[in-house]
Amino acid sequence: DDDDGDDWRQATPTATPTSGKADKVKGDKSPRDSNGDKSPRDPKDAFSLIADAGQENLGFKVDYNSDPVIVTKVTRGLWAEQHEVKVGFPLLRIGKKETSQLSKEKMKKLLDEKRPLELTFRKKVVKTAKPKQKASAKGEESWLPTFGLT
Image 1 (cartoon, rainbow, N blue to C red):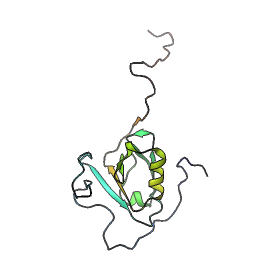
Image 2: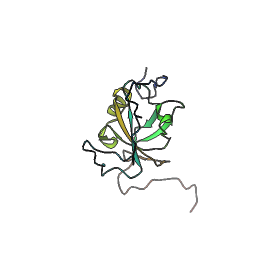
Image 3: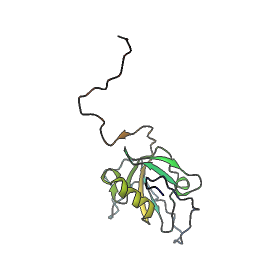
Image 4: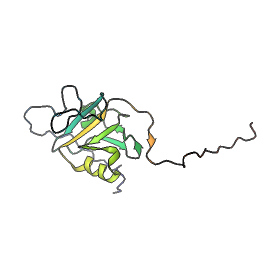
């Protein structure tokens, strides 16, 4: 097994006995803190989902190296698709932490192992994301050959 995050288990979604409540956060779908207040840093189109204990495979992959972290794949029939997570949705927070504050290793561990787990997405498809690390120093211009064109 390699440890680059592409080793996704194929599993059927598991049902967890609950009180009958859906695991999708209802209402205005704005994340709330422990006091029930809306998180001021999340956009209005943000929504939170909770993966219950027993939910092994969340059924989505993300680009850990983009800013924001975005969903790159959703597996048909699994948890993410059942909760209307789409390719291109930014993943804003895992638990109480913003993804920009988490390392790739920590994000992978939380997504693979922690349950219950609250995930906050933005309901806006992002087609291209900026890399977290800058490729060149500020002020440098990229050089492309002109092949005699002026």
